[in-house]
Length: 142
Length: 412
Image 1 (cartoon, rainbow over the protein chains, first blue to last red):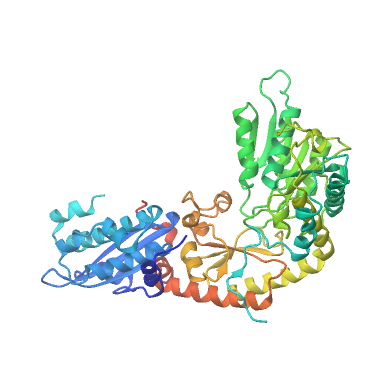
Image 2: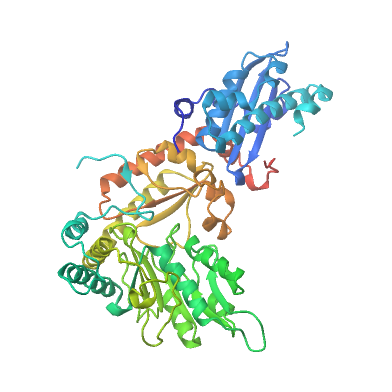
């Protein structure tokens, strides 16, 4: 399968790879929202962590991904796009925008769906930790 | 020696045609172009000579008589002819029962065996698909346990195409002969690489293909035993009655000549080649396992083809790994590399977990594989696995001491 240049670029130079601490550490940090979606037996696991400022802006984001090149590129791109955005703005990112940006073929659309889900799940996690649960239900439901 | 890219390490998929094979084929395109069935002129005789010489070469490689070789278009056709042809010829019901007979095969056979068997189920045959053990080796005892009064055919491959494991073929053949059951083996990955003797190994029907043994694509052979027992097959292709009526159609003379030459070369060079490739594979496996943790060899460690390895690199997904070693041509059991988006059914059938299939890489060496190429592959794979592990959330969890199989994943 031929990959688009943008996918290859993200694969070779993934943006914002990492985590803000071990899974235990970030679980207790209120300024961090964590979204882990997918499953190893399905061949895709995405982990997105967002660091949210007091004013509700995503000031930093980190990702890790077990998955194909398109999954890595989708999650890498997601971190680029959500940085500097408010939670509501980040919630507005659609998987179709990721498909378009990375020129993903139809068989890889699920990678972009996972990336969108990881954003929503991370935001929901942040809201849950900060007692903003009512608003979060919509984002968490899938 | 300077390396040429991309490096080919997918010899289980297909092989480069040996230039000596091509040379043998060339006159049959432009000069000796006759139809081997033309009995009354020189063009026909020359073509026939080429075909019959190739039949001798093919028969010799497997210890058969030339009369027992049927030309086909490849292993898929050979398997179809063997399985459907034998089933239709020997169809019978158990005493006092309905049905057309029972067939035994295994769940990790090639699709060219599984799908003909599935079609026969639709025609009223009963098929047992043996579940392989985690080491992938089908034993005589497993087949024995599945044999029934109405079993007419057993089809067990000699060596598996994905993991290279070697089944107990001679033993299963002996069992079938004791019980009067026809025994077919898909030997596509075996013949030409490993010594084969259809008499000593108790084979009734054996499929193999030209392009896996440094011959051309589109040509294969089926060995059909003529004595003790004499095996009969119902043809799939009817027509001019070629190949003793078992496979009609004008013969692919150029392909067959190439197939014959490929068999002769394999016979001559097999022993040295086998030894050399085994050493290269051992280098590949031991280096990768010493440099990287979380690496597993899939299938039985000893009962394996010497030139093939199937390894799982834990916490790394196969397609992304292939992307990281794009100058090495090989394959993965990952879902993303298959059209169906399903991980390898062969690895799944071993019951070793889907994530291992997603993380698997099959590397298969061949006649021109060199130590330089293998060393390059080792470095490339090590680098790619490490690069991907820095990105892998599963690797982090593993490093934190968390058992990934115990986590409740949000499956999609």
